[in-house]
Length: 112
Image 1: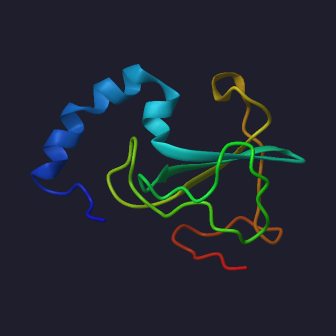
Image 2 (image 1 turned 120 degrees about the vertical axis):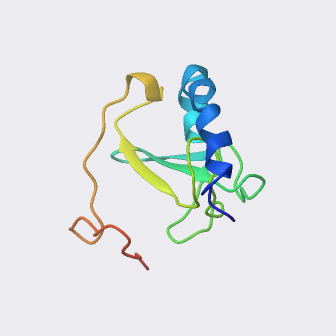
């Protein structure tokens, strides 16, 4: 998927206010929320039409749930991962998270 660079970024910038005014779902774009023991893990900016799970479905470790995209408030494909303590998102607090006991470096690929 292409990123918004050069002249296309102007169109993206002009619609930024509309996304912000529409609230969290517009900023997150296509997203999945997974309830777990520590709260909720949220995956945002997923590719439109790529969801492979349904609401209420139990998912397992390593199970694909969607494809990387750039929906919502995103200029290039990536997946935003965030842990929160509860729903709804608007009143939730962030929960610290790690991968294999450490915080990954920017751009690092996590496998497993």
